[in-house]
Structure formats: C-alpha cells, structure tokens
Image (cartoon, rainbow, N blue to C red; front, side, top):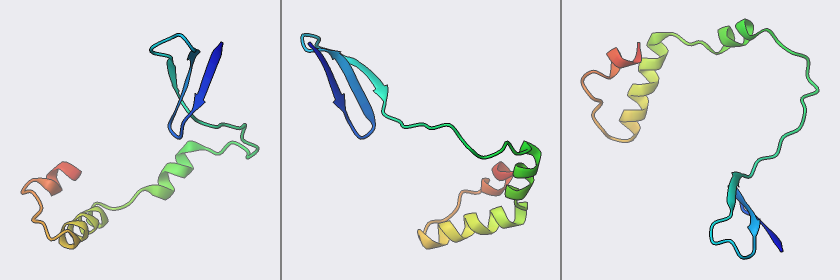
Length: 77
C-alpha cells in the first residue's frame, strides 16, 4: 500500500512498510501568464544606495538595542 502524507513543508511518499519514506518539498507551481520582462530593468528598480543600506542597518541595530559590529559597513559594500 502506498502512503502519501502531505505536510506543511514536506510531503512524505512511500510504502506503508518503509521506515523512511521519500521526502520532497511540498510546493505548488503554476505556469505564469505574464509576459517575460527584461531582467536588467527589474534589477535596476530594486537597487539601493550604499547610504540607504547603512541607514537601514543602523535602524535595525538601534531597534534591537544592540551595538553594530565594527566592520559592518565595510562588509556591506
């Protein structure tokens, strides 16, 4: 008898007598109906300045009330 156990992250498929069934990611996919876009345009829209990155990092550390590491800004660039 084949057993299928759908989980929230992984789906287990195998025989009832198996101790270790096959584990696969539980994902859903459907074909896209949108037209293809040029990847260079999409990348340019999401790019941000180095100054903005440093501001966001500083805000996150300030909210968490933690001191940022000494080399955090060099590792961003």
